Image (cartoon, rainbow, N blue to C red; front, side, top):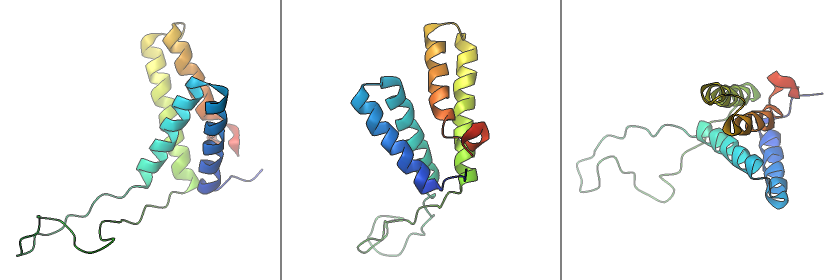
Length: 125
């Protein structure tokens, strides 16, 4: 099976999120929203350091329609796999700190299981 593109993967996550919302699966909803936000944040570019001009505009502000729109960074499937692996690691670390047998530890395990479905490292490829 071929590795899906980033767009295909995010579309799948969004579809799964809609299904989870309809089914009332709060753990899945939470983790899928978090994963989509993590991917979206990774696509964001750092704002450039604008130099102040000798006019009365706000320092660093840009002028003109659309001047504040930034091109988003294009992620590769490997970038997304790294994000997913980092999210899973965070959940596993938190699970170890609270104890895997606790209720919260089990919830963290369920979240990690949901996310791992989208990782080619964990079998998506």
